[in-house]
Length: 202
Image (tube, rainbow, N blue to C red; front, side, top):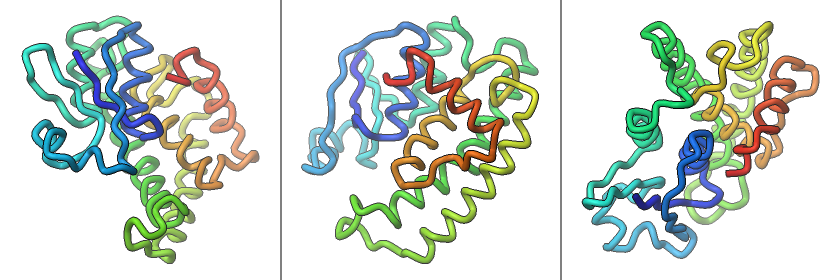
């Protein structure tokens, strides 16, 4: 296998942490988006959307989208289970991962795109929209803080892909000067817990 990667990318980090949790290693090809490598014909032949990550199998088959890659890897390497073991666990992980994508990752991405200096001049930034996403994200932090009170991880008592999704989003939020407010004790403790895992820097 070969993983086409963006070192600082939120979604590539999701896959790297997922793989690290499973002890998986493969050839990694870093793509320089600033230099437009993701828009070159040879990469667009692999993923016409130009997004990362992309997993290329030995037979040339391409899998794009971080969760699709994670599901493929879970099927091949079910332990440790990061998508749940039983039907109920899988449904709960799916529910919470989807919530983390929609309620945490999506507004974080919007904050990054519309307020971070990196995108100034690269895209049309809408500052008011970015600020509204910052406000929304703070509300979602408070919501999540209440939801995880009394448990160690987002989808239950085991670390799962829902935690990976949220921790990758919070890393980007922190880079946008939007860290978890210290008064949100449960979310602060959770972020410290997942950030201390050996795989957190994958």
